Length: 468
Image 1 (spheres, rainbow, N blue to C red):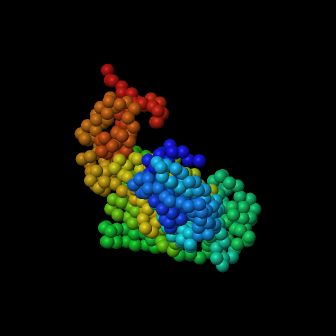
Image 2 (cartoon, rainbow, N blue to C red):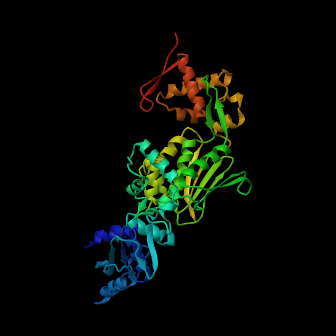
Image 3 (cartoon, rainbow, N blue to C red):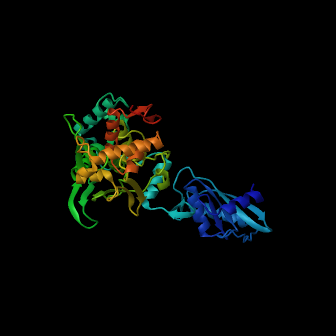
């Protein structure tokens, strides 16, 4: 039972993901009831307008019963709500309490709604499908592929997959290939699932990665359509990206030169895999990757899944939701991904070595877009890779102790004097140089006997050594 204090608190907060304010009972109330049922439940206060003003509502002896009956007859499946009549400020308010419905989605006369922030969003066909699978704790890729048989699977691909799983030691597969795929639920009732066909189909399923090199949004330098199973898509996409981005070499005195790529390759691979395993495969559009002079964008069909939001992705604590559970599990077992929900954390860690590089992501009308970019004027790694600027003591100049490099090492010493726990990343940012340059300078200072490191990389500190 609501008290006056409860009503005060609710109204003061205003409309939200769990509260709707309505002056009268109308079709908007029914939409809100369905939207709350398809999300996590909520409360509708009737007799309060959008400006939080108490207007009150007139009800008769049969009004509440009539409202409940209207909710029941106009929703599919029929849902029941709790309705309370409240007296507040000498006026009547009605509270409609809606619980989350366990098997979604709930419809209102054939239309489906879900609560997002403080409004009711009508679901598209793809969103209806996703919500249904999500509520059943199943996914599209677990269902049999239409008209496919086991003869449509490539046995060689399956054997390579089984070996890779066993080598990864996250799961042990024993038996013939049919038994192994059945154990992983990639085969059901002796038929290949959607996941099995995506991973091992003999024929191209025409779910492609469309990738190209751009000078501007309208000037295309090179264009490629990559086809194959999901593992092939990852490998071929990465080969193309590597062929289009720049690389420099650091001379370290070792027989092999260290390669310094324009972008962290592990981060790019993580983003490519993320697009491939989480895209909406009921949408026939291609994954689209555009490589610009100082940015790479990756678009995949299908918005964020399972209630995940853009704000969630900005944290390191979000709960992962897999649209394609069997595909995600396959990539996990082959150690192509680590664990669910950790990908963006690793990407952020990997691009941290590139001082002006940033990661952006957004939902678009047709899906989800991620962008990795860097400042053309400021990023020092670009200077090292593109210009080979000896005046800045770039990574190819390790044998030349220039005036600039000596000056920079003195600047490092001053930074350490100010803060002996300063990280290499912060040093690179403050001096506007690449991480590889900072690391080389620190090693030089150590060899000269001017600096030592005490403790671990994370919890240790720098100690300057004064020469007598």
